[in-house]
Image 1 (cartoon, rainbow over the protein chains, first blue to last red):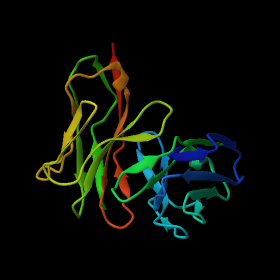
Image 2: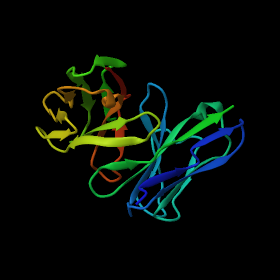
Image 3: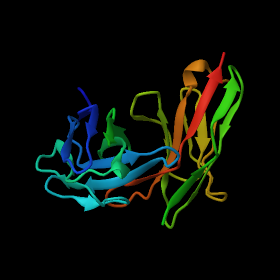
Image 4: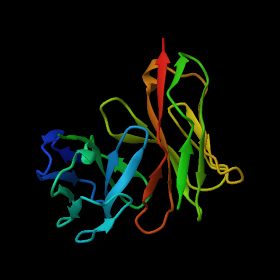
Amino acid sequence: NAGVTQTPKFRVLKTGQSMTLLCAQDMNHEYMYWYRQDPGMGLRLIHYSVGEGTTAKGEVPDGYNVSRLKKQNFLLGLESAAPSQTSVYFCASAGSYYEQYFGPGTRLTVT
Amino acid sequence: GDSVTQMEGPVTLSEEAFLTINCTYTATGYPSLFWYVQYPGEGLQLLLKATKADDKGSNKGFEATYRKETTSFHLEKGSVQVSDSAVYFCALSDRMGAQKLVFGQGTRLTINP
């Protein structure tokens, strides 16, 4: 039982490049989330999903897109990376009892 | 909208000291409250939670009580250890629909031997 996994762990992009972050969970959870963590700002919700085939915007969605084609996977895409998107990205999933389980994070640097 | 405010960090204590990290919230509904902990280089882990007023969450010697009258959920531990060094996040969930979490800014705790 791996819980929530994220790939890659680290990535460096140049401004304007694109990439996709993959999140996978093996707990059969309905809800999945993408957050970004910046110093002194806690975690902020980018996008989330309440089930397979659904997505919705969170607090800071601009510049990101997501897809949830399979229940166990939640993809976060950056179409044209900007230095302001340098951050640590966390994926989380949740079942019925409000507890979110987090992945280990992806550290992204945009130069 | 809903928000969470934590005491400013960083906090540095000696081993066996008493710990309090303050957390207050504003919410339009009746939220559930959480403390998460992040150890260096890792993701967040749930430390404890409380879902209704006067509930006390506890885990690993940490405690927090849901105080509706003061809209607070302060984290306490009677005797901290070096292994408690981490970043602590207070969070709330409005318990509706997508169970979204709203986080405080985090408090970095360092325990010196």
